[in-house]
Length: 227
Image 1 (spheres, one colour):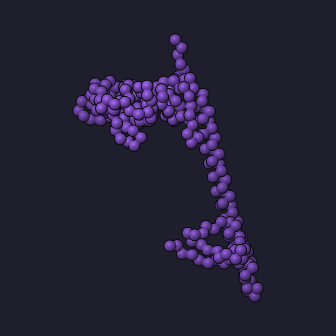
Image 2: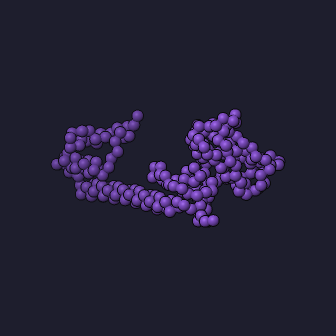
Image 3: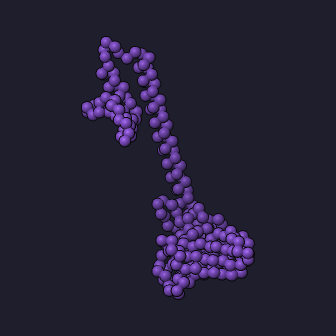
């Protein structure tokens, strides 16, 4: 329990305190100063130097608070401005071909999500793990002798028992191993046409192949080549 020290009373007669129960701002500081002046001994008033020192402390406190407020407002403005730019950029990508990193895929009653991934070297085996919203592995697939570079695997939407899973979002992890059993660096990506944009908490997500990709995950953008 913090220490509470009495500092006098406010205009309503309430006891002013310090400690974790009370944070003093510039208004509190000024009220304390006025209260101190009102209750000083008229036969032994505060000398000029002490009074000037009190005013200087109040002025410094006010300047620091104003600076803090200005900085906070500036950061909020910069964040909103950047968010607006990103959201505007996202809508301009509709109809374009993109490649983006991601971790989630969406499964509905008819689709078979295509899982794209990149390998830094040739892999003796690649293990694809698909997890539900609670992080439980619901399906695992193993592909052998996979070349370095961009690869893909089309998931049938079924679990390891061959049962079709329910609609919703699933996360993907890729683990690759060389012939000696050593792990290889992998990255998961999706490549396709942007069909729409959705917003969550003010941030834009691109809809690509039934998957919602954060704008920050986009690494390549290209025009659709008409045949």
